[in-house]
Length: 169
Image (cartoon, rainbow, N blue to C red):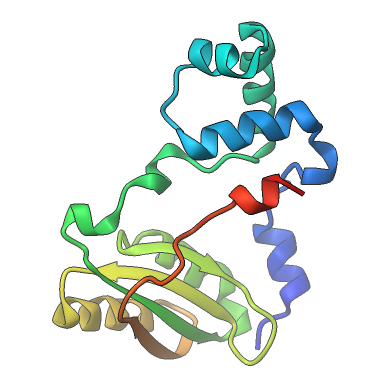
């Protein structure tokens, strides 16, 4: 089992929190959540703000890590990766950094989290087919430091990724 405090210390990002965001920041984020491709000038007009205000706040929130990269909106199925799964992994603590470095090199790994509990890492992956998912799972299992894996294939998405409700708080 991995020591989560050391893992989070090494991997954790500092992210601006909603407590640090004011009402204007939340309005900007809510509008972007609704239409992430809206030009800054149009966004400023919709929110009745100066273009410079919107621009500087977006730059600040981007630098602070409050916004995901635009590529996170690309659907893997549109790239031929319609099979999604979660791979739970148990690690040998002495090889943590090598395992994470190896996982970063697997294109089908979308994200990786360190949960509390019996599992050391939960890795969200995509694949072209069930056979391809087997290949991806094996590639993960063979990463240095990974002792054991368990794969759960998702049958369908019932609630997509969302943050709009959080912005209203």
